[in-house]
Figure 1 (cartoon, rainbow, N blue to C red):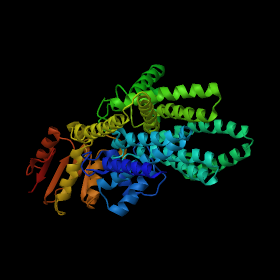
Figure 2 (tube, one colour; figure 1 turned 90 degrees about the horizontal axis):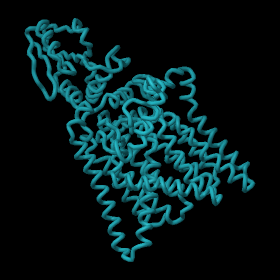
Figure 3 (cartoon, rainbow, N blue to C red; figure 1 turned 90 degrees about the vertical axis):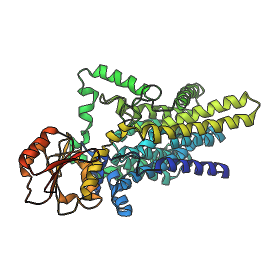
Length: 521
C-alpha cells in the first residue's frame, strides 16, 4: 500500500471510530432488553456456544461482552463498546476485501475500496448497529474477513490464507442466524475458481486449498454443530414463527416481502426505530443512486465477461451479485416487521462495495468529460463531506434525540434500575413486572423486559437486593415494618389501588418517567 492510500485509510478509520465511539454512553439512550440479556448472561453464564433463552442466540457476542466486562467493568458502555470495535474493524475489512476482490481493475481497485470503506464508515445503517448490543453486527465483520482471505488465498496460492478464512467462516456460525445463508455463497466462489484452476491444469491445488478451508471451518464450527445435533429445536428457534411459510398465504407473503426488501435501500426502509429512522430509506438518497449505478454496472460487467469469456471478471461480479441476493433471503423469507434491516445485515458490505463502484464510475465519467480537474476534485471532496455531515446529523440529532428512540430503547427501565441502586440496602425493594415478553430462566417466569432493570442493578451488584414479581403474585410482598418500595414497570392505576388497599400506610410518588409506591417512609 502506498503512503497516500495508507493516510487516507487511516483517516477513514478515524472517522469510523468517531462515528461509533462519540457519546456511546448516551446515544442510543436506555438499554433494550435484548441487549440487557446479553449482558446478564455474560455475567452469569459466559463461555457457552449457544444460549437458548429469548428465542435462542449464538454465543460469540455474549462471550466477547464477558471479555469486555473483565477489562472495562460491568456497564451499558461495556456492552456497546464490543459492537463499536467490531464495526470499526469491519470498515478496515471492507477496504481489504474490496481492493482484493476488484484487483482486476488494477489501480482503480484502491480508489473503489477507499470510497466503499468511507461510505461504510459514515453509514447510518452500519453506525447504528455498531452502537447497539446486538450480535448481528458480527455478521458483516465475519463475511468481509472470511471472503478477503479466501480470495487472497486463491490469488496468492498460500495455505495460510485458506486456514485463516476457514477460522473466520467457522466463527460465523457463532454470530447470528442469518449467517447460515452464507453457506450458499460458497458455491458461487468455489465453482468458478475450479474451472480457472482446471484450465491451468492445477486442479489438485484447488482441491487441496478447498479441503483446508472446509476442514478448518468444520473444526471451528464443530462445537455448535454438536450442540444443535443434541438440541435440534434450537437450530430453528426464532425462524419458524416468522417464516413466510407460517403465513396464511405464503406465496403472497413472499412477494410482498421480496418487493419490500428490494425497495428498502432507496424508498421505504425498516419501520423499527431501533433499527432505523423509522421508514426512511436505508441509504442516504445520493448514496442510494450510487448503489443502483453500482448494481447496474456489475450486471453489465457480468454479461460482458460471459461474452468475452473473461473468467476473472466473471468471478468478481458474479460473487458480488450472488452475495447480495443470498443475504437478502433472511429478510425476504420472513413476513414480520418488513423490511427488516437487521435480518439482512449481511448485505451491508456488498451494498457499500456497489456504492464504491457507482461512485468511481461517476467520477471517471466526469473526469473524462471535464477539463477542470481541480474543480472536479473539489466537488468530490465537497460531496464526501456533505454525505458525512448528513449521516452524522441524521444519527446523532434527528434519530438520537428523537423521543421515539428513548421509548423504544426503554430508557424508563434504565431509570428504574438507577433509582433502585440509589436506595439504601435496608429498604425492601419489589419490582412488579407488568410488561409482556418472553419468560426467561431467572427469576422463574419473569418476562424479558425486566432484564434491563436487572442489568442496571448488576452494574453496582445490587440485583440480589430486589424481588421481581408478576402482578398475580402480590401476596408475596412482605413489609415486616421496614421501609419498602413497590415499583411497577408500567403505570397501572388498578395496581396502585390494590397497593393502597393492601398497604394503606403507603403513598404514590412520581419519579423520572415512572411511579413508585413507598411504605413506611
